[in-house]
Length: 128
Image 1 (spheres, rainbow, N blue to C red):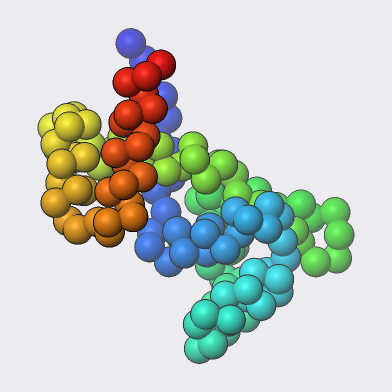
Image 2 (cartoon, rainbow, N blue to C red):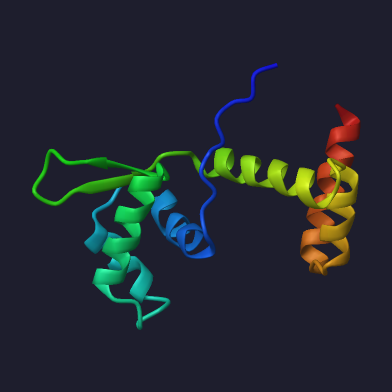
């Protein structure tokens, strides 16, 4: 079986930027910077622009250059990237075991509300 080309893995800073960009869908570096400084006022526009340019070069972002201000968008949907990262983590850290990964996540500390939501998801899955 031929192995598909490895998708780029974002760094923590790149994941933070994607968390801002996914809800926007597509945005200029200025729009992303404006969203980021609400939580982290120390981040400069130049830092955001440079990171977005690097992410574009890595294939994490696509860029529309038809306007004066370039518009960037995530190259992968949030769910798709999270699934790929999860599969990679499961293979590397948990010997491919989804059960081991889930148990480790549950042991790391979840809130009562999260535990209730997980229990409801499991119950709903049993009823189908």
